[in-house]
Length: 383
Image 1 (tube, rainbow, N blue to C red):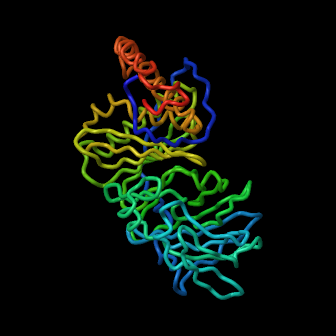
Image 2: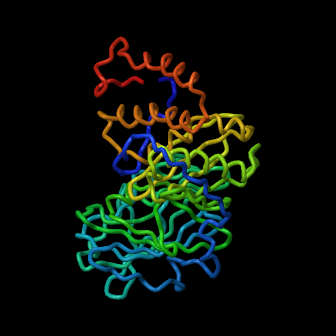
Image 3: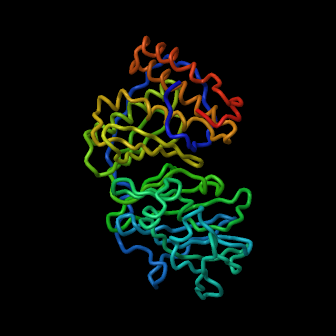
């Protein structure tokens, strides 16, 4: 079919649910306004290079633990943690190491600075018994220099950076290793992520969270929306849109509820939808998951509520949260499923007319036929 989002999509690792119609009508839950992690706001931030620090988290059974303080309107993170390693390098995701500052490891009660070599920080003192580390990460500089949502980017006054950008960890990730991090906000800097939390504490397997969903920090407006079987958090830039905050919440609620009705339950415990400004009336989406689910929706500042309701992209991205990430060879499956199911979900909800559904299907399906030079679904490099 003709519809598509950006070609690079990373999805939450959940098994696809049954693809059947649901007869029961599920009521639409309301939305409530909350602050992005504002409950813990207040007090001075952790300072990695000074004397004012939080108590070190406890290392429990191979668990890597972090205290994360967000300050300066989301521009900088101060982090202290305990990690267990094998004497190899400490690292963050590709491209993020230059923005880690003042990294130090405690050895025999003395803090020793670590110098960066390439993308890693040699840390022979960090062995199986675990070591304390502390450092800061300049998210704003990373966003300006890299401008990649998989590392860091600026989104209309918010800063987006997944945990892999700012959780310094051993380069060797043993099977079953877990990560726990607690977030405290300061100086008007707010935080939201697609990882489920209990009392602002997020945890999961290291392999999941180091490839985990988007996180946003800084100045934003956040709505929580209850959906049958789950929930959606909408983090919206404070930049002016043609749609109001209520309009955006209604758009997200309707799209998520339609999907919940189709499956019989919402496919994720929580999905974060980040709404960032884009040109005119354009709408583009990108989904990232593993240990949670988050969607970046780049929405034109002139897009109206009526046009948003008729747009297919948000439904497409939400469907991605119900299917696991596949390798490049099988990308046709995850993209194909989201592309095929999106109009089915919307037609059953009455958003798309039956005639339009069949017309689009008849016109769009032939675009999936092999083109000149194609080598089959698993080997082609074309759409």
